[in-house]
Length: 302
Image (cartoon, rainbow, N blue to C red; front, side, top):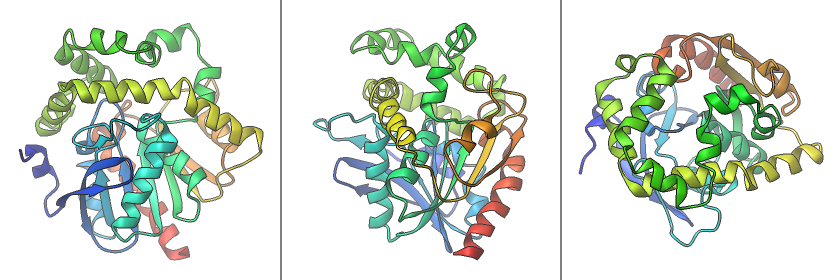
């Protein structure tokens, strides 16, 4: 069934791309340097509807549902399907199959974790990284506190072994996603009704909720291991990084986000933006004000 939320992306082509481990639903439009936009929990590609059409005026914009989210599916026999390394590998394959050997990647929330893993694992392809409201996973665990646990309880609940979180989430998916998005925005009416309905429909599917749990299980296990291995080996992200964070928020045990990222990347710039967690939807003008010049600089260098 055609997704009504696609009306939020006028002129974008809707297609499916097969990779080694996944069948991905992806929108694309525009011309020029390629940009990959990756959304977070508990959303779909609709999260970028206030950003992607603007970028398409100067870039080739690719907007998939993250593997396991929305209408994108991982194969049932894939080991560690929620790992950011696995997701990054398949999204990298997707970009190559679409003809994009070099591209910038912009990731929000869970998509931000896939984005920086892609920068580590596929440096030959990633020209720049934009991280929206994300610092690396080890810093999140190392800075975990009572306040973090009370505010981000889903990091712990959804990481529990199956079928516990899936069973709890099935009790009232609509209540859970509305509470989650309401907390992220402070006001659900800030979200476009078509986007909100797209999130609700996807979250209503047991297979999507299971994939989300696999995502958080990986964060507590293999993702943390992979990131710590890079840090221990002294590996850093070599491409330019733009960091956009929630204005006034500290991360990873009370540290400034720019200070945290300085440990992980060689070149970092950024700014805090007011508007809560879902900045691409609640503060799109501010996001674009930082994003467009940054991508323009990368294109000029390339």
